[in-house]
Amino acid sequence: MANSTSLKGPYAGRLIPSIDPSIFSYIRIGRSFEVRHGNVADALNKLQYTLRRNRVIQELRLAARHEKKGYKRRRLSSERWRKRFAHEVRKKVQLVNKIRARGE
Image (cartoon, rainbow, N blue to C red):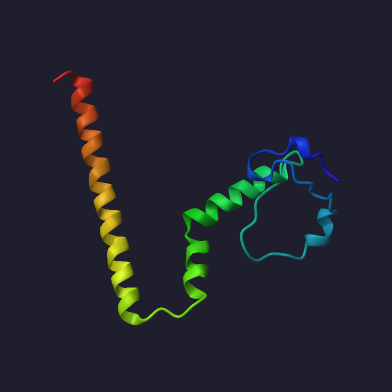
C-alpha cells in the first residue's frame, strides 16, 4: 500500500494500492497521464482537470437522460451567450487594468 500521507488534493488520506504497471501495458485507448515518483494523486488531479476542461463529465451527465430538441437548442444558445459575455467582461477588465497601470 502507498503511504497515504504523501497524497495531496482530494485524494489525501486515501490508501492507493501498489499495482504492477506491466499488467496495464495492453491499454492504449483513452487519456493517460504519467505517474511521476509514485505520486498517483497528482496524476489523478491532472486527469480530473483535463476532463473538466474538456467538459466530459458534463456531457456524460447530459447524455444520461434524453433532452428535447428545443431544450437542447435553448441550452446551447444560452451557453454560447454566457461564454461570449464572459469573454467581453474579461476584455473590459483587462482594459481598465491597463488604463489604471498607466495612471490615467
